[in-house]
Image 1 (cartoon, rainbow, N blue to C red):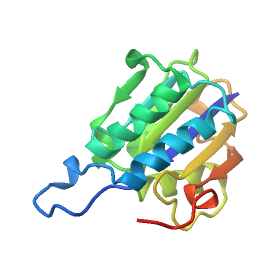
Image 2 (image 1 turned 180 degrees about the horizontal axis):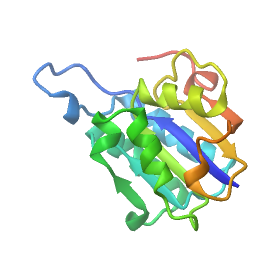
Image 3 (image 1 turned 90 degrees about the horizontal axis):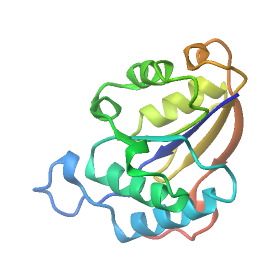
Image 4 (image 1 turned 60 degrees about the vertical axis):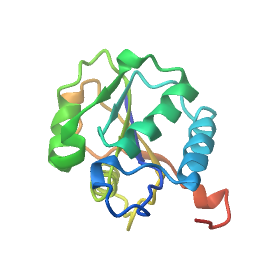
Length: 168
């Protein structure tokens, strides 16, 4: 069995129009949601073997919350530029190249890729995975090379809105 947890980065700020997309920070709500959802997730799943993250500031900060909550060593948090700008096909290829000793991966990225991957891997339909939305998927496979051979099983779908009233 292989497990993949897809996470869309937390809410980021658009306040400073001079800040480029790559360097947008999390809002207060984004920080709150990342802290809450990472701690919440520790009660649902085991510690991931690896965390892949986009190198953007908002994804990196989101990854910090999840790595801290799960006590994942820095060596097992991998920043990959392709998660930001190469699309969902690249991410699938990244997963297919994983060593088969790795059973559980967390991937923190961006839309539309997170939503596309959730739909593709589960066969379910997600219109839009919101910020700090989390999709847990289990695959009945022994090698990551087989990740596209059959749909994964949706284990859970969690969003902050289930636990907080809407705020900015």
